[in-house]
Length: 386
Image 1 (cartoon, rainbow, N blue to C red):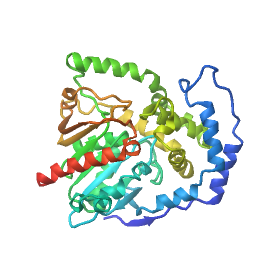
Image 2 (image 1 turned 135 degrees about the vertical axis):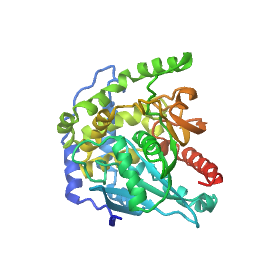
Image 3 (image 1 turned 120 degrees about the vertical axis):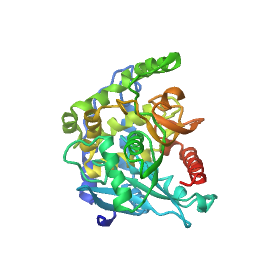
Image 4 (image 1 turned 60 degrees about the vertical axis):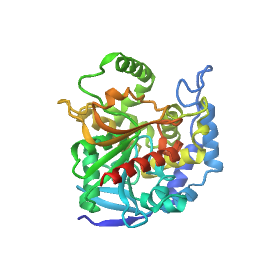
């Protein structure tokens, strides 16, 4: 079992001042006169956000918020992994691994961790408690930077080792959206002995036979059409991430614009009012995690890693994830879900929940809906002697 060290975030003032200086000196430039958000991050919004960043945003306040959780670092297969480990209340909390994605961070889960671990403090029942383990993905945030791109399948192997060899859990439930959904899929596929069930709020995997029947074919055609204007960032990060990094690593405004565009486009917003789903402080704290750790570059590598691993294809042999799987479908998810018939060829679907609202960043946008769905799924697992 590897050594586990407590971790506390304390960003030097010199780092914060450098970020401020770069924002202050940013050479603002033109945007098409007919532009709102269709050309990318809106110029007027970016200027307003950066003014707030300089005049009102308080990183140290949010650093304190981050540090309220128990953070650790452990060497796993030669890489230092950061993770939050909030041990649950009661006598038998269920181990729950929750994984974030891009362009997010472990702080996506700040509204979920304590209610999951200590439901009795929030009007719930102690028997619903979880041991919550929330890692930073390799190359993201507070985890170490891998020597070269790791894809979600390799990350799943690291996380399984973290849960079993490092933390000593015999079995666990895994949950994730965005890349976390892909990691969960591989945990359920490759590591079913320990990962006994998964809960996902995104479908990232594909079946080798493709869509079958009119409804599935209609979904596939619409999906491809919807992704035309979303594919630019994905193609760049999956093919030439290093080139992008030179523009970004010393440009806080550039990083902010690259990430903000996705939070606006992928969230369940009121029109283009990004703050109908996310506060400026939450957006900036997520951005700052990339900046203070210098991980914009290595976080983008996961796209390259997935391409090397084979892309979205789960199995060439028509195999599926056989562990019990819960699917939470949020209506504004930018990777639109196919009909259930397609999903059931990929997963052993035991729970299928169509949510009334919410988008890609479910843990941030609708934490209560996500929390209740995870909890209800776990109850069904407990009833079947998980």
